[in-house]
Image (tube, rainbow, N blue to C red; front, side):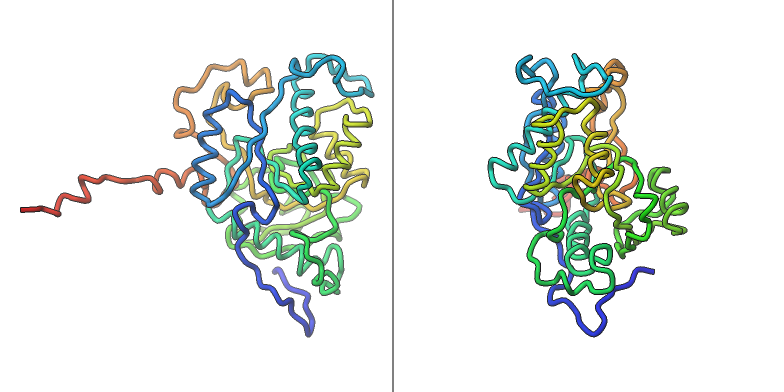
Length: 332
């Protein structure tokens, strides 16, 4: 079972709900300008959850001028690859964070789903890293109590929306199990995470707990946070100064595995993909984009790994029948 390591002391602050930007300075989402369907949905779920999102437009590879094409290394031919546009979009976010002196920001894709209790989930994650971080401090977690950075002061990136990955197999000692009443059970999370919980962390179930471990090899950039210095490091290491030659999510993962940036990964993740089926499910995967368009839209969408989906909650939230409510309110 999860435990706390306070000894005879206890931190002054107790876990509390995160604010409208989940205790980061901004929540930024990437979206192609034409994806107004996704932007409409994000406006609705943000308002439903009491969150504030900022949009930065996505980029296609053909929008990158030949003179501005990133420096290349390795055998992969980058010309015309959709993932170069994805890199440019994330690089634009990093630059936005740097230029606007944003101390930390959460970056999400425009098709995410999350729990209706996301403020509690992220508030707890923040508190654990600030006041109960055994990965960083061992059994002397009080050493970090004087720091005043959201989620602690020792990270470049936080992964809360990865779609796969693995911890460092040589440092499995660096992890902690934390209580979370909003974490789903093992049978309702992605098989990848179920396998990690059982095989790696020796947990028989994921219900009501999550695991924090140092970021090592995450897959996908569906939901991750960076500090300003973390954004600077990523921009320097991946295309803004130094060359690269692979999709951006691979590059970010490898920089964590190499120790050139560092952070923490939360699993099961707090953000997952919302799928409606057909071509709408991707703007950069040619195989998916070539499928037929779905005419049902978000109302028929699904997600895996969320206990109480914010998107699925909209039906109940907006349910209303004025005339039914007024049927017994007769006036003379």
